[in-house]
Length: 76
Image (tube, rainbow, N blue to C red; front, side):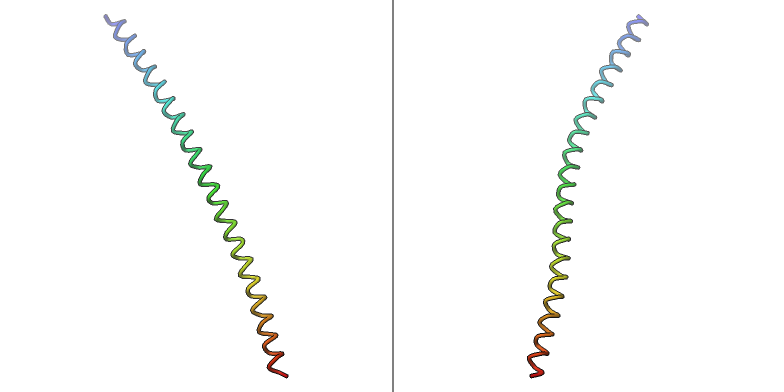
């Protein structure tokens, strides 16, 4: 009887371990997909920030050009 109990406990432990490993593998796969999606969204956000910064720089140059032209017209 004692050997049967040990064997039953060992089989239960092994099956539990297999279940945990399968569950962790699936969870990891889901997490990797979520991480890839988040990484793509961060990349897109960074592109928007870069373009916005460039537009702000261009706008500052344009504003300066307009002010310069306005002064030249008013000097005449």
